[in-house]
Image 1 (cartoon, rainbow, N blue to C red):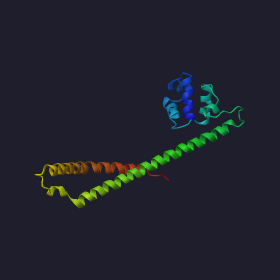
Image 2: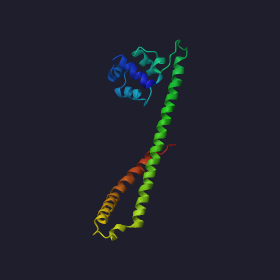
Image 3: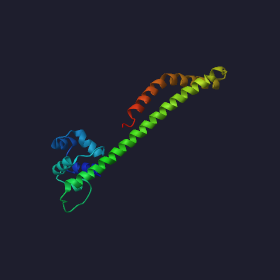
Image 4: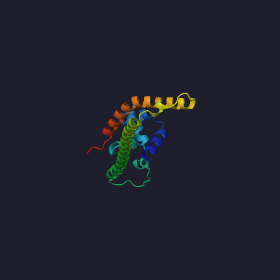
Length: 169
């Protein structure tokens, strides 16, 4: 909600991200992250943002409040805390998903290597005078050749990814 309102109000005031960032003494990327919903401003910056855009904080947050609350900063910081917690949970879920996908890739590569070792290269005993068998054998040999050369690199990269995305305690 904040990201959409911020972008709409900024554009209605004919301000670029650079101009708004300069007025708030932040970098343009910060404004971009706010508008994409990747992060939210802290309470002080939100108040500054509302002053620069000449818009109440409640409007930025998507509420229509007619009377200002006496402890507006406390309420505002609680709402921002909730948004930050939601963003943190989303980030943790994506990290865990990536972790398990990389782990599955490692297991898949190891299993494929085991299968290649167990089966050997059965297509090498085929009769290559038949054109269909020759094409299939060539394709299988090409796949095996590429796999044997690329899989160790992929395995190392995926293992490094599993290590880097592990849950830190």
